[in-house]
Length: 183
Image 1: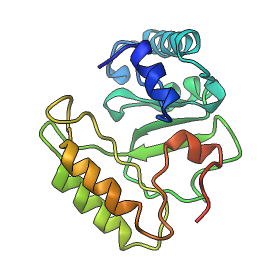
Image 2 (image 1 turned 135 degrees about the horizontal axis):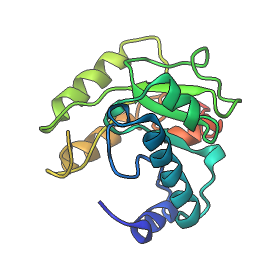
Image 3 (image 1 turned 60 degrees about the vertical axis):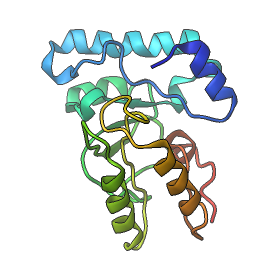
């Protein structure tokens, strides 16, 4: 939880802040026009309130990882990519980094309880592959949100991952803009 004062402070410290929803509804469960209005209202509010925000660099993150082709097509007219449900290990044949508005990023999450063990399992499994881009959707720290992780676990995980050669832990929007993709 937070507001744009909090989010602008986080952004100024290097965190990536992306649009998620206006009312945190499952947009597949409401009338299409209402869902489109909900997305547009969210993006407009981000434009007005988040320092340096640009739709063309944004990833719209569907609440509940729930979308339809019509919803994705609508919001992709404004944003670089959408994040929605779908288990994929992505690579540059799946994601067109150079073309805004063409990217569908699949991810999964787990909840409602802590998901430290799940995250460890998925990352360890991914590290055994030939590579790509794994997106896990986490919601909160220390009992906040749906599917949170413990702060101590997250700190340890990040410390472990940044030591792995040829592995980058990079925010989604930066990857799509081609930033920090070097070894």
